[in-house]
Length: 625
Ligand code: NI
Image (cartoon, rainbow, N blue to C red):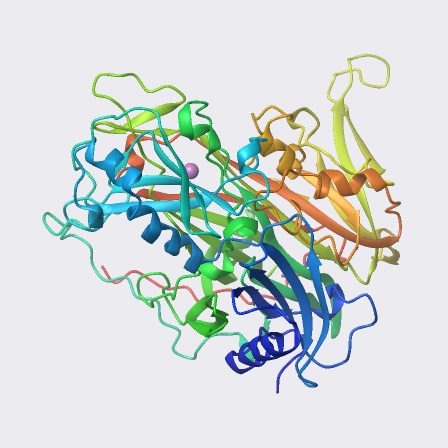
């Protein structure tokens, strides 16, 4: 039985594509950027959506350079809405990304620039068609563009980013499939080949098996995309843009299912690089809105990506013709032992009670060019929800002339530098703490000078203030006041009469370094605050807007909050920005060990007491040796 929030099946994608082809009037040059579930709560339909399942469709018509979108009623096989969105560019799907390389390599000027660098075999050249951004250059206005970066594949053939071709950047017209110009800022010697990432010799021999067994099976139950585990209720979802989405997150408390979030996702990200030179200043990546994280999900492998008793969810994406493409094992779910949950020892009688923690892990991994992102969600027995990114893959390498000192970066291998950059993630939480009507508050602490009422200078004041409107709720972290934020329901109280609440406990973070006026900053206003709250609006889903590709900015979180809508006892959406600042190290070459970045949601008066008192203690096991 299909649930209204289940991701589209292959048959549903095929149906939506057929209906769109037949009923939209789009000509045969149109291709499909996105065919995904049109979620009832955030449908683009102006009128009330039908009760049946619908598909959201976004297309690009090459002949007219138009981006079009609509909604297909799947039960009625009818196109309900079809709009041309003026002045925007659809995402660059994987097929278009790779199509670029084929015609660029055939371009005589490009071949000449390669030959001038001693590169004659174009089969060894990797060209990547990155989103061109918007830099106010007149000849780039109104066209569908990409700005390219180039590499020579290493000799072992296992690292396509092994030998960067510095200073060679074709600007291409993706629509007409031609090179507009070659930005050639001067040849730099190709670095020596140090890039093998799959060594076969001298592997460690002292690793003994570490098996995870669950003889009675896992403690979760699965019904389609619905999951239940240790009082948690969660629905797994997917779309091409955000990848893994979680719906209807709730906790069963003494027999009562209490909602916490309608929906949670990593809604946008950007990776600005800090080198101002030549073609490098154009390097930034809105991987969600420009390319699509969901379109880039890996098929995971048991024993490699995942360990233990795994439940995999398959999802269905599609190519640009609209043909469905199933991504098997796209989403991994399993339980992990997570050390100690709580412990108390009575030192008088020596009796101890220790309870082990376990967590439910729901994750997916996206490979986007050189980089790999693992998107992990953790559910804990004490009501915590953890959000984590595991960043790995190959740091973006650039060739540097021998003997030259790296500026705005590090030498990470002979002849190779990698520039300082930030991975900035924007998470969207459509909140529902004990219901739709929520409010947000900021909690801060301060010391006071020694004096009357504070004779020993140890006083700490606690202040909690409601963030009454959207402009007021755009906030940064502050170490000096140990600041955090909470989302509460003032109509639902715990046993002390306090509003039930969940708080965001910030973790890994930084602030952006881009000048606020820079072209990238204008498109990524979300970077400049760590916490945002907005009133639910079904059109406000992506913090850099619906169409960040080549956007000049003007649509996104920092623009929406100018409306300054009231937030007290409203339908609230919370956005959290997590900034992973990264100056690459030699240890990140040729492939970077996982770097973790995370934050947590924690119940804060949501429960009446420790909700994990009922977790039974573990069995003591004595070592055999
Ligand atoms: Ni990085």
